Length: 410
Image (tube, rainbow, N blue to C red; front, side, top):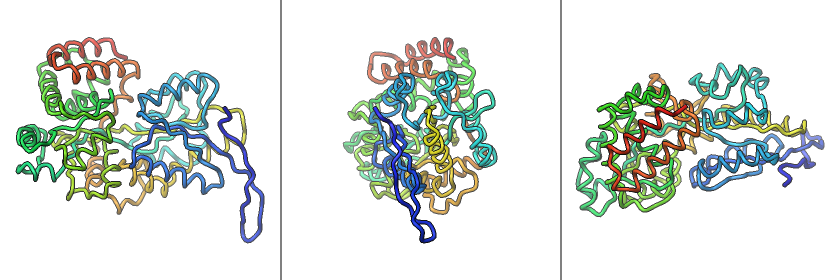
């Protein structure tokens, strides 16, 4: 497969026509929902404005489906020009194998160290002192999204925390609503557990378990309460018969479900649906209990391709993705927070403002991908898929298996 090609185009500068080369770059990612597509179009528009051409390589099914395809192509000698991964260790082996470009020269020239916040994002792109990726946003999964209409229909106030939300479940069910919308993609059930862990046991407990592999803490009564809450969430989402995360979000948008535990990327779907934060829907960072922002999100890596024109275009794309204008345009559509600390965000909505305020206060935690290897996270994903799909698996049994996985994690 020919992944890119150089084409001749015409450009006019100061009234004089001059022939320049435009390079096509195939960019792979897993952004396929309505809100995500609107956001990625901002990247494409900004890159095309340089005279080059963004060739979209969207892979449906989310990161769990897309990453193996991306990795297989890169290791199999059929690399794309740029590809999305999450912040953290997902591309670590590809970097170590020499398959990803070193972006240190671009990073130093443009002062990424001075503009990217928090510093851990650039650190996640750095190996042995060299920068290998471009962080483009901050996505936090620590949110509960609520349908104001669903609670109005059920005749109960919109909750302000997890305890109130769980207590409202019977009223929602009586009104014909699904209390908790949840899709069946593996990462969604693990995400729900991780959010419950941070909210109910606290950020320190989360970091010790996922970052330090503290199996003793994972086995403690404190975490037993988290598993009991996960059992409650399992019951509340039992009738949520959808697959993709954005389908679950749509249940909240339409008022068919009371709420959804999901990352701030859900905001893009509310925006596309024309809903207004604080009026049509409510957002509770940290489930209204522990308000923190997780410094997860997305970064782009650039596979090594032996072509100087492609390398030059890759550098341009890296630069464009971090430009102030593109950072604002992309993140307002994506629902995420910009990685630049110097951009104008007057247009942010109520929920984005909450996230920015938490970030400014320094209440942050790292994402699981920054703390634990991809292989270990896959095993934990599998556990929670089983737990949420098998009502016969007790919370106690799930916790015992979780402890074993943490003991053996890296």
